[in-house]
Length: 439
Image (cartoon, rainbow, N blue to C red; front, side, top):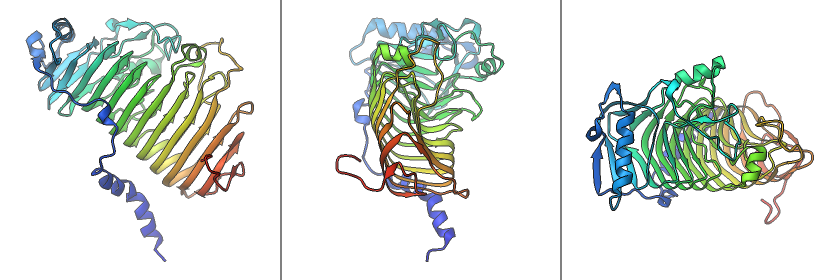
């Protein structure tokens, strides 16, 4: 018999062994948006930028982007940010450009919230996510752009979010906090080889966009920083997230598609999204779908993920009033260590934008496949709790092993599906065999 200590050691190190082995494989979706070499290179210094950590360079960045948009060089233009600390407020990007952060370059957000620009709320949300009305513009923003790259030699984008977090805690915010990077109505976006720190709100938010690749990115924020989601694809399609490390104060990755009646009316789903070789920790969810998924979510693949010191490993969340659907979702090869709850698929999560949401708009959850999941130090294996008027269907668990010292049971209701090779055994609502075409 293999000693218990050896078995535990294998489970603890398996994510790292797996990562070393997988690193040499060529399984990728990053071909969706290839790296482009720009024919023209300009420097932020050409526009009066000063990287001394004191000079505010907002106008320099805006002038540089304006020049790129007006000149329209064949093949596009690279805006080079050399080593230094470049203090700046919010600025927009334009099509056919690369924002390149050299080694030793830090692009740092100003903390002057009084003059931070405002913009309209997203139509699929109907209001700011935190407060009624508009929202603050992201530090780096793109609307209606294509062929845009943000990259470098592990250059840093620091949102200096402490001032925003403090306003949230003191309840003195007037509008919803800014994201660090947001692209709206955009396509062919590549974000790679950069480090993101201390976002005021969500870190990377592609919304109403397609062909987005996020690869080799590291994202950090304190675990007590509020709502600092790592990457939130929102009403977007053909999104590839790979080889990324995330440690923040909220969900590492959360797929969304609008909020209640506004998301239903806007009707733009999130689909064809791949999340692969993502690692990290969060006090909330590792990989989440929802809860704002009123436009629908389908065709999602999550594989080769390792999580540690996390609240919920796999989280599919929705609520009455959301409407929409979550279907054809696959999680496979997920490793967890020190997780409060391994798997949670529930229909009672999230608040509402206002009192006008439709209480009869029940979401549909169908076709969630979870296989080859291993976990140690898991306090509770999971919960699968559907909605009485809209049972969750085709919830399939295959080779799911979630060990913990407490031996707490699963909780299940209003769900149908199947389970095979699950420890501890989930619940009577899931059958013990898979029918062809079912799981």
